[in-house]
Length: 363
Ligand SMILES: *Cc1c(COP(=O)(O)O)cnc(C)c1O
Image 1 (tube, helix red, strand yellow):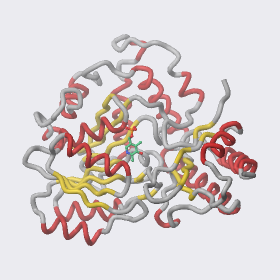
Image 2 (cartoon, protein in one colour):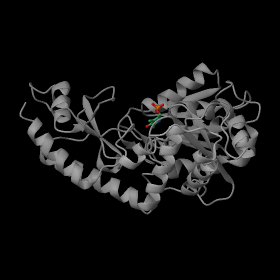
Image 3 (cartoon, rainbow, N blue to C red):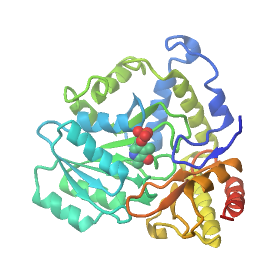
């Protein structure tokens, strides 16, 4: 089988050692599996999120969306109302979850290339005092946009509103402290910047808010409180079958994050990758969808070249044959493709990718 690097927002390229951690079948209650592994993981991810003792964490089976759905469905009671900020597919998905679960919500929509407007959001919160929660995506993977978490966090603190942050594609790749930002719930998943494989998501949240979720879930398996309470009281046990291989791989990925010297170093590597990528692509004549000030160091949307012979499929397969898999665009009103630079990807890989792009652009 041909090997290639995934330049995607996850599942992404993992290290060989992360993959090797899965080459064994584990029994969840046997000592070999390491009964403390889940507790170790929970402690480590909480520490990476903040050193504020008010926080705890919980792991949830499923892709990242399951964790988002668990948080919204468990945290928003029938008396609460959530303001959803939407400037991309993942903001929109949170609104869809609210529709399906019949959660009281208000959606403020922005075009995908536009950052949320703090003044407008402030006035919505001031005028509607039935709003108790605000949910926003940090890095909108749709475009690569970095949304303004500091300003929104500050606003939520001022207005005494619980901030739910979808930090799926940013946690581990961008430094921020959820305690300092007073974030209520922060959601991420195994297969993004921690560099594990897909299979579960995780939530770092204030204990007090997790306690308050008791009895509020609108789903049996996506009950955040019950999952957290079970892990808390039975030494990291999952309520239902745990994704053992994924857990082992994730634990290995956390060790490798430590070896890399933590999030600061990883964020620096990603930022270097992204700068090199954009610089090289611009030299080849490509244009980015977003201005540099709005751009995250995670994934970049490039406008499709305005050339009659350009076809994404052809470009994609040429790059794949040269060892790189890129991502189609997801923006509604612009023709784009995306290149991620997270995962086990280093500047050498970006240099080789740029060389591959150079070969691929003889349309
Ligand atoms: C990846 C991602 C998700 C979760 O997507 P799944 O396909 O369910 O794993 C949610 N939000 C953002 C911003 C993401 O990048």
